[in-house]
Length: 146
Length: 414
Image (cartoon, one colour):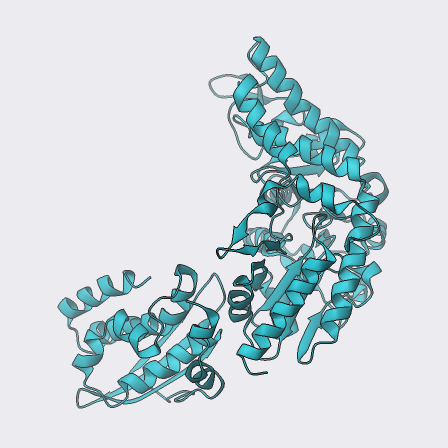
């Protein structure tokens, strides 16, 4: 992808004015991850109520792709059924961003928030729902993200 | 538009990779030399010639190929000793790189000489390779690790060193002769002088300095010195640890195995002479031989000329960059105090985004924390972009680089 296709107005806007930026006190899901190669950091907080995403926020440091992607992901899942969020695939995220053809180095930036989300859901399934069957599936999915 | 010091055109002709295009039709502008440099045809030929005509293991066999290989391998050691003005050839130990050299000292000297409550001093502008081995050692021994701070000009605050030295507990001071992020040239002789007063050992990381400055170990008077071949036209996988003979003699071996022994019995082994005591196993023969060709190449140009060329190029680049609106340049402004490494941030463009954009114009720079996260914390940034020069870079390339930065600004609407 050329830079002009990556750094479109919408990506720059979410990078500079991130929606749902911040923290939730005492959230149901709290998950953090970083990319050791480039130092991007991301933390996501989610509250689940009546099997829906009642609230979601993120904080982080990093490139425009990683931060815009995180912000757009929070908008994508806000208010949605937990089942829908569980089933989200990385193609959904890249489509949502309009970044389907990133190279191998930068695709990790775009998917960092997705990895954080899925890892958080995994912990939630294990710790809160005790749903080991779904958790195992989720674990497999997380390891195959990059 | 070459600098007045070296004939760049003939130098560039020696580097086949500089002729390749990237992103289909863009000329390669390679500005990631602090990470690794390109290799001249002389180095590539020396390696391939070894494999084509006298490949064999060294030191033990008596056949002609082995004798040729041993001679070429050992000649490199002599050339290195001369290049850094070391007193004795047996003080030159071949390792895989600077990282391994520092780990060797931490293991083979540190574990014998650092005790509980001792202090190891390093600096805020170290590469992780000159921090993590000391953290491991300090944890193991219950010793303390302290840092010489960096001032706003990107230079070390030597008062911090004095403060630690005065405790009487410092056993080792380990620092880089040139910062891989700021380009700052450390006042190494001054640090060594202060340490000597307290009988404190000094390790210098020369990974960034030996490729770009004339280094004279007898003048420096340190105790340990480490550097890598691949940052100075040589191949990857070869580095040098230099250490004082009397220290090496008293150190335990780092690796046990072939070539480092004198006699092996069932329960007891005596060590080979220096430096072989520290070179267990078949070494990286081909690349050591390739390294000799790199040293010859730099010798032919002359390290003074290399330095002058880089100073002129750095000054040219700093002048142009400092005119850009929204740029933050890190490190000393005075080019006599710094090497050809320029770290910067441009507006709110994250370095990874910047590197992606200018890569499209054929420009290779580094972006990220440069294995110096302690310094990133000090600078209060998560990352910087870094352009670094070498003998084959030109002012025209600096112009292409600056033009591309302006394109990035436009894309980010700055």
